[in-house]
Image (cartoon, rainbow, N blue to C red; front, side, top):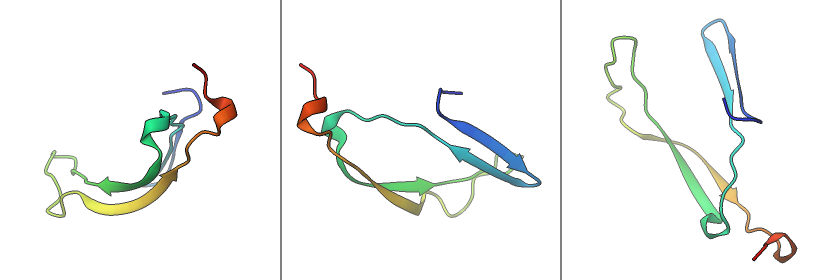
Length: 66
């Protein structure tokens, strides 16, 4: 697992947190899509459903290095 990321289980629930760093060109509003498979590797009929969104902030000019 990547440094700063984690996964925790409690009963049949799994919580996963990711630390992700983006390049300046990736800034803006982003969408998250979710798909799932069961233990027999059968994919859900609800293929790639919208799950959420987030915004990647552009770095301030004092953090950009040439």
